[in-house]
Length: 194
Image (cartoon, rainbow, N blue to C red; front, side):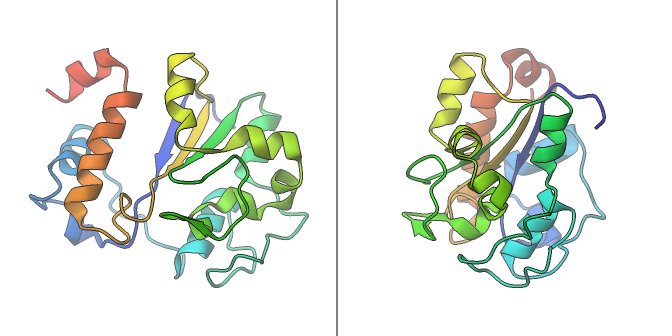
């Protein structure tokens, strides 16, 4: 693993590059794209959602080809969390509207299991301590920020509205701006986004 202190991935849904970049309904997304790095050659592996999420943390779709709730990655499949832990670092996924840590239901409110790839890896899911500690509701984030307990790797999934899956892009833009205001240290916010 390359050396890193913190990596944050926030996943949004189902919008083409041209729908987001230079869209005046998404001023905050575009401010970030202009201030930081914009990946112009990153594409989905396949469709629908779940195989792409699995590939993000498993390096491959691992045979999952559709959105399912009873399927699982093969037991021998290594995941990004395995590599992170082996390097002595920590990880956590924060899932908006997930009702409890390690929740295994298909949906709850605007939470959808198909957008939580970690729960599909049985070495994580079946390890009660690992699952309860690292697959948590989004509400856990504010506590982790306030106590200085942010993990090295963070994977955030907004709910089905805030990730632009079911709602307009301006909703996702407002959500991201609010979220980044919480997560970014004040000195970075002032220096890069003024």
